[in-house]
Image (cartoon, rainbow, N blue to C red; front, side, top):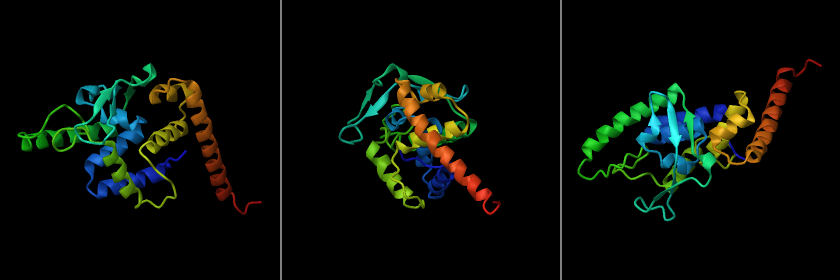
Length: 213
């Protein structure tokens, strides 16, 4: 189960921002700060986002077998638990506000060709971004990070879970936020992550107390 530690996530997001990839910065920050699936994120429309209440409503998922910009479908999630509302923090709200302003400017410049379907993570002419595009961009960016891990978009979901556990969230809270239909799924991930955190804590303690005995 591969995921980024907090310091690795910070470095990754900094690298993404420094390369001027503002939309990808928002994409990966959203995955890491919400724990949503990539398909759920790409399906998001502005009507799903309430910047005043700081919530995102997840009701659909993006499906695109051939990775063509116009060949996608918006499907209902396979379980009822996947349909959920999650609260986001002020930092993410600020990023969304900035992106909305920039997207409005782009729509004006591209108004003759922009097919406005209200997608948040849209390409320059309005269609939602394809998953392959996200994967390829992630592969390029992760090379700049000094980690020996196979990181995929789904890794950010595990990253979010690990951060929730470190923040003290319980199994039920994590299940609701991630949209797991079966709590056993959450418990298995929770147990795995908790073991990792315990080992990391033990290592930190050992480093701190080295030479005392």
